[in-house]
Image 1 (cartoon, rainbow, N blue to C red):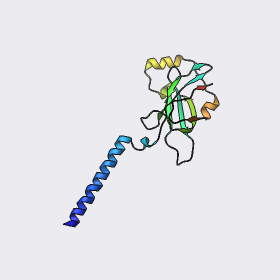
Image 2: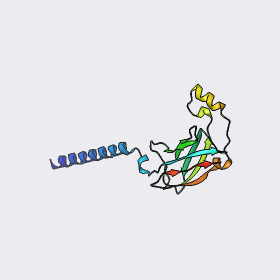
Image 3: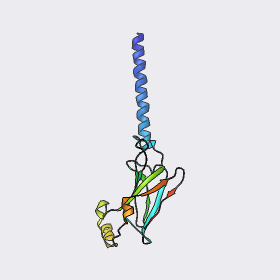
Image 4: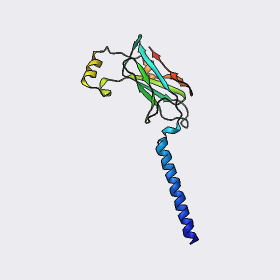
Length: 152
């Protein structure tokens, strides 16, 4: 009888533990919640003009043990972007050093209706300089709004 009681307790405590772990994963997400973030936004301009449809990618720099997900954003018509973690629904980027790359995406890369496509095609085509494509190093600081403007 005592053996059966111990077995029931063991099974119940294991089930309770698994339930708590499962609930924790649902609430925090599968790993994305373990990385601290800080808000990051900015503007991309070329020759003083804002550039739309630029994919802004922040990739953490550091040892493999420290690296987590990168962050991306897309510029709007005013050249402004706001970053979000890749694979997550959290705004910002991890604090620390990042290599930033910028790429103008062709219109087919983003979901556009006919009107938006026609408007995009009417805009003069902009070419970003080499440094924007190969990477620029920046620092994301914890506990503050980080503004990184890229002016070419």
